[in-house]
Length: 85
Image 1: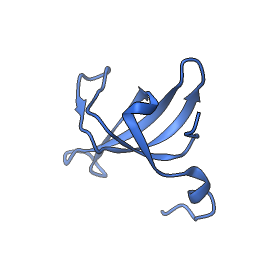
Image 2: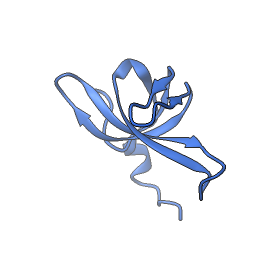
Image 3: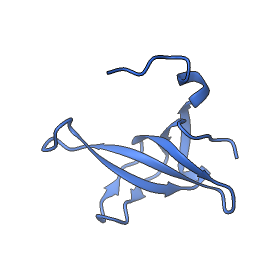
Image 4: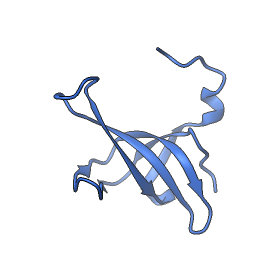
């Protein structure tokens, strides 16, 4: 298991959001919120642009396999940086 909670990821494939049947496009950024060992999987919060919502984004929580994403920033890199407000 190479990814960890709070790693920032980018999707490598289109993802089907099971809750609202939305297709989340390849290249979407997100954050790992939970890790599973058997089988290996990751609960990820993904943000997609949505102009009608306050803040401009809609969020989905999906389960991804390691082949569906790449890590763009490790949680160990972000833990020493202040959280922007």
